[in-house]
Length: 161
Image 1 (cartoon, helix red, strand yellow):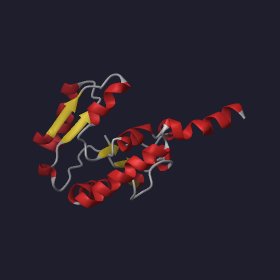
Image 2 (cartoon, helix red, strand yellow; image 1 turned 90 degrees about the horizontal axis):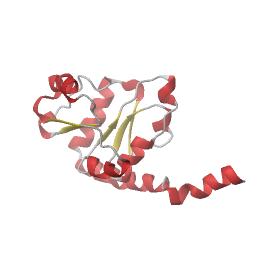
Image 3 (cartoon, rainbow, N blue to C red; image 1 turned 45 degrees about the vertical axis):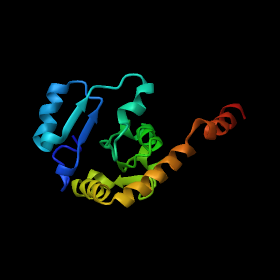
Image 4 (tube, helix red, strand yellow; image 1 turned 90 degrees about the vertical axis):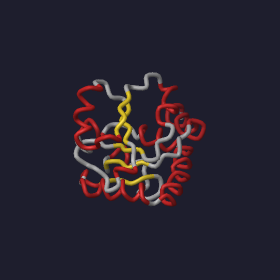
């Protein structure tokens, strides 16, 4: 619902992919009203091993969350998954994403889910290929910092110290 009604200035240059849609018929009607012909809905990708294939080819990952106590306790995993594939993200400025995303480096954080800020970030990444490529390289670096081989020592220190 956060992105409902948001259409980038250059929607004809874009293809919108919504992954993990349980009810394709209902959601197609909801999103088609806004995005028209450039929308592809895909069912859930199933096993996590299918994720790289599911998001391959995406240029910009969107991670919207509503502000509530449940979402404040979520993890930043979705942004890390996109970043691991070199995909910069645009996310709600909420605790899980704030812990991980460095605004302007591996993605953008959108304050208060303001429509104009979402659109500004989306449009800038669509229009500025150099920015998108630079953020893509930074995205991979940020994701590698969260790699299990990098963080395992921290976990061992916490649980077995």
